[in-house]
Image 1 (cartoon, protein in one colour):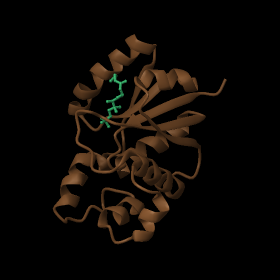
Image 2: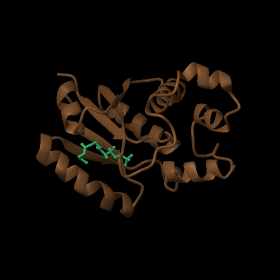
Image 3: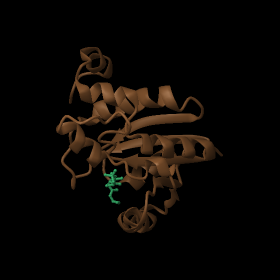
Image 4: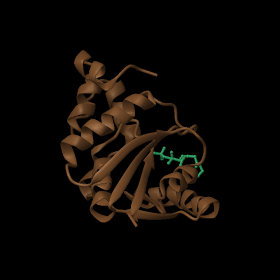
Amino acid sequence: MTSIAVVPGSFDPVTLGHLDVIARAANVFEEVHVVVVHNPDKSAMIPISRRVALIERAIADAVPNGRIIVRSWSMGLLVDYCTDVGAKVIVKGIRGAADVDYETPMAIVNRHLGRIETIFMMPNPQHAHVSSSLVRQVAALGGDVSPYVPPVVHEFLQGDADTTITALGSPE
Ligand code: PNS
């Protein structure tokens, strides 16, 4: 039986910390599904279809090994996606204590709802301070986010590449 893990998140946008966790998951599981989910608690910057395209491009550049599938999910509970694809495990990155506090209730609820276990992985400490919300804020104020995001996201956020936008598909 193929071991499948789901790496879910808002990915608004995907960061180098996310890619680090995705690569670690791909080293452990035979198949990894990166699932972009709308989080109603957060106001989104990038349309979901673009986030999917950015992750696909970033993975093609940075995580060559491993079977990685990128999808969005808007049909309800994340555990339903996991069950649909036969995944028994969700993988989340933990940068520190605040992430443990944030992730623990979700992990327990997902176990109750769908018998899906959550495995926490520690990203490289060099990414410990990187978050999508920080990237959104720095980008909105014209700062340089290139140390925190893959090159394709940096180009996209700079908005200097109509070609990038064309290549990534039309907005929702
Ligand atoms: O990157 P985020 O915003 O912290 O990711 C949170 C996310 C999207 C993984 C979480 O909100 C989620 O799983 N949403 C799907 C709806 C769901 O299943 N909710 C109940 C369990 S948390």
